Image 1 (cartoon, one colour):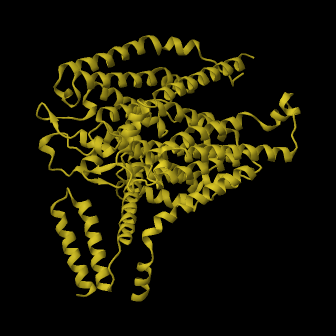
Image 2 (spheres, each protein chain N blue to C red):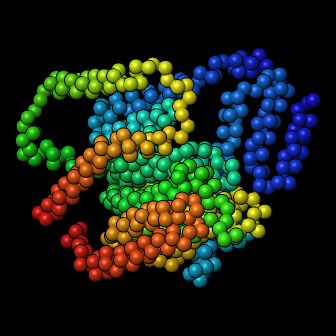
Image 3 (cartoon, rainbow over the protein chains, first blue to last red):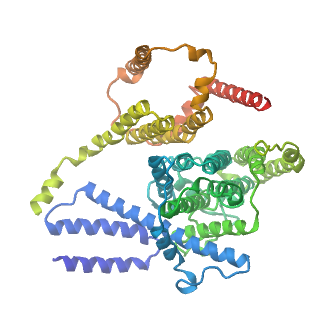
Length: 426
Length: 190
């Protein structure tokens, strides 16, 4: 048996895999390992385990990176298109069909631009900041289950790992702001860090609620806990429960803020602090910051899909013929495009409004969802809660009452107006 | 060509993971050393962060993923930011210029070194004693494969055996938070 016969054999097997789209990605990895083993036999050596593991890990890394970078490229053009449509313009339509090759043009432009480093900047830290920013962002997607049995790193503490790596962004923003040696940069970095720390609390707390009810910190386990239907056809997604809906909205707001999206794009508020920590960055370093932001946004949206929107599960029983990984990416795009919608609709927050919103409304509300989830769990005797009227009414009552109370008494226009002080304007 | 392949494949690759810990370990020591030696305080702080990260990686390499990620989350996400902000908010010139009673109390560099050595020796002795007198040291053989799902175990222990220390830490942290708010409030009045 020569090399070409082997190649032909495996290519035919590969084409045969397309009969079952559901298992296609997993089977591809299996086929690759098999191919490598056979290739080793052909060369007269037994392929050792570590070599197989290394090669399949590398292939997996490349596949995930390419997927998320393509998502980033598509998002950058779709976002501009949608924004343009909302503002009654055409948007990019010159490069390629419907302007679809715009990201390529942008990439070439960014690569060929001059890379400026201010003379007063701290050269090393200024250089390292984009790397520190992009490395954790690119690592985030590996913890997400893209389909049934399709998770790159199946950790029992996956959600914790996700947030732990997400903490690297704050460090990178600080490094960028401080190393630029520019007061707009450092002010922007301070703002960005204050915002990230404030919104991380409701974000993590609302993820914690799901972990408590599902009884696991592993994203796969949480996605699996949402499979199945109640009342025959309604999806058992956590967003369908009262506490889950509240937590999902909180998580969505937190995700908007963590990825610096409008209305939380204060760190880059052009009219106030030029571009914040990005002021002194140009060329490809600037592009890397943007890439990290968008990949991070997709990763956080993927976590939102996994935690609340049923992960890779189909919404209705009659739609189960669609592969699970298709469902994951459909939901991912739905959430990402809804963020563009929010961006076109809402104006930017003022900084004191933003901080008050986080500490006076989102944080107490996320603690309340914890309570509501506990009520759901214990009133409904654990997993049976889906069919228990007591669980539904108890948790709905807690969420609704506290929402109304918080909205009426704790977070009002009067409160935020009287306490406002302009410390730096005098 | 075949001989080369076979030679590479025959190397003791199984032992590789045991030696890979040298990379984060040495990097951690280097970063810690640099943190002491560097002149720029922010650079030192960033080196401390690097050594925190390497410590987290070491924990993960030892199979303690939970501890490793908590190390990253708490130390890189929170403590590092605290250190950096503290450095930024206390300009070096201000500290030296203030008539702080401590600034008159100048130790010679030899005394500084002696004090540092004494503190690090005490910490090392404490750690060694803790290891020597731990129940694990008595029965030396450790399980070859750590038990699966240690997160649930950690949670259970945290809320049963170590509940009192946990509450004590919670009270301490709350007190620190209240104190910090008080100091900040007085500062803004003046």
